[in-house]
Image (cartoon, rainbow, N blue to C red; front, side, top):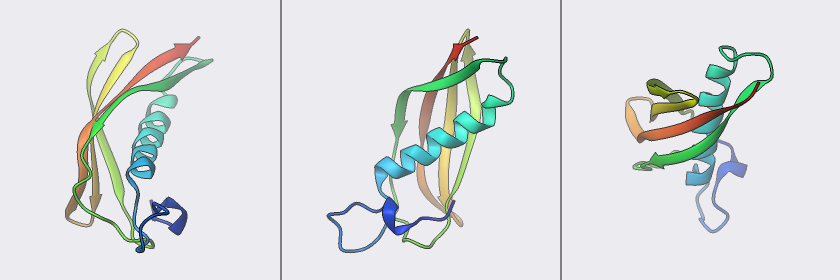
Length: 102
């Protein structure tokens, strides 16, 4: 993903990736990655996020969101997530999603 000016907190003088927008990127990555593996009429909703935000990323720079599914408990999915900018760790943590519909 490329960080854009609208992803920046309005109260900061520099345009950098905000924590809420970083979380949105994590959620959308996990949602899109598993959607193709669900049954017709099913989707997932986010139910828990626990991530760090250890480094800033300027507008115009790229971040990569990666994950690994570490647990599946019936309809709950647990993801270990990581956000990087080049070789720099921006965020790591966990995200949980729940399968609904169907």
